[in-house]
Image (cartoon, rainbow, N blue to C red; front, side, top):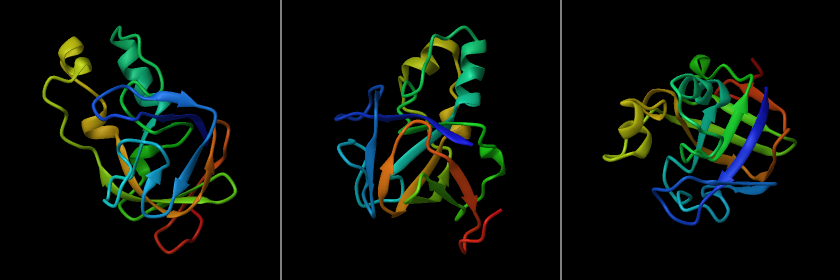
Length: 149
C-alpha cells in the first residue's frame, strides 16, 4: 500500500496539480491546498483502482483529476471504516471522517459519463499527526485506537 500521487490546488472546483511532496498539518490539511482548513474534510483520498474504473469508461483521467489530495495504490479503501487511521510515511497520520460526498452540480466528469467515483469511493480525513507526504510513501492502516490491522 503506497502513495501514488500527492496533489494540491490553490482554488476549489478545479483539478489538482501533482507535486513532489507536501506538508500535512495537524487540524488543517495539506499546506497550500484550497480545501485545507479547520473542518472534517481536510484531506481527500482516492484509490488508483477507482480512477481505473473511470478510465475503463473511456475517460482520460489521472491522479488529481477528481480533486483528490492523495492517490493510493494497493489500499483496499472499501475495507476502511470511520475513525480508522492511515499512517503515511514515517510521521503523518490521518483519521477517516467521511466516506463519499455529494457530487458538484455540473461536475465535468459527471457530465461526460453520467457518473463519478468520488460520491461513493472518495475518502476524507483530518490530520492527527503532521508530516511530509510524497509519492512512494508506505501506507499502514491502523484501527481507531492506533492498533495495527
